[in-house]
Structures are given as structure tokens and as C-alpha cells.
Amino acid sequence: MPWSDHHRRAARYNHWINSQLYQACHQLSQQQLSADAGLFFNSISGTLNHLLITDLLWLSRLANSYPILEELRDIEFPPQLDGIISHDLNQLWQLRQRIDDVMIRWTDLLRQDDAKAVIEYTSSSGTDYAKPLDATLQHVFNHQTHHRGQITAVLGKLGVDYGETDLLFMPGEN
Image (spheres, rainbow, N blue to C red):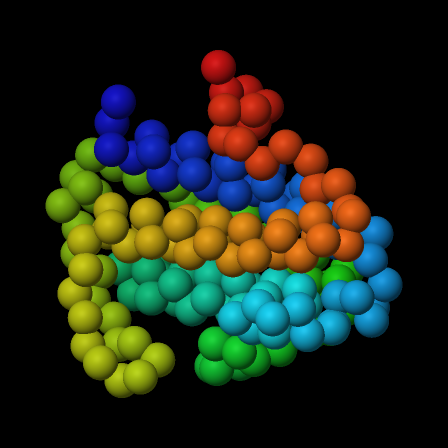
């Protein structure tokens, strides 16, 4: 399997599971979404915002080497990892769909030569890094999985069915 197929699958899984997660979150009240649930970013809403912010941050870093951010340039997002883009779940969902769509289309364009690419960026703390593209993409998708797991734990405690989360059950996977 080419190295990039892993990231194509991850982008599609990301889209699928985010759809299920947001659908489950739409069953909650604003109070439940905003309540401190003991997550790294306090609430479900705070965690959904964090995921959007970090995805936009990584896409902006990747855009230094790849022209992938053009469709998202209209989005202003706070530089803080605990910032808030919106408290409105519908607005967050619209943005989530746009980002996931860009990630799918971009990973579809990865070439074999990109396996050797190195992404240079400055972290939010001001440290300069140079990391392999392959590891960077794996980090981006793994980071989302980590925080979605926190959200599904809270949804489970609230009695909300968030559906199947296993990659093997994603539509189109054999």
C-alpha cells in the first residue's frame, strides 16, 4: 500500500466519525455542550472548538509548502489552542465539514514524492520545527481521535448513542 493511502483513509474516517459525533452532539442542550465535563478543554463545545483551531493551525502550516488553504482563508480563528470560534454547534458543524472536505481532497492529491517532504513551522510557543510530512499527518489525525475519544466518553455518560466508531465499520471499508 502506498504511504499516502493511510492518510487518505484517515481523512475519510475523520469525515465519517465527525459526522456521527456532531449528529450525537445535536441531541444535547446548549447547557450540556457548554458544561465543564473535565475534558482538557473543559466542555464538549470547548473540545470541538479546539479541534477546529488545531486543524486550521496545521492546515496553515501545511499551506507554507502546499496550496491547500485557499478555500479556508476567510476563516478567522483564535491563536490560542483553548480559544473559541463559536458556541453555536451548527456553525461549528459547517466549519468542520469544510475542513474535512479540504483534508480529503488534499490527501487525494498526495504523490509518492511527498513521502520525503519535510514541513517547517513555528509552534504556538515560538519554537521552530522541521518534521516529516508523513509523521505530521499522522499526528493531525491521531490528535483528533484522542479528543473525539474524550467527547464520546462524555456522550456515553449522558446516555447519547454516538454510533459505531471503529474504522473497520466505516462505510466503504472491507
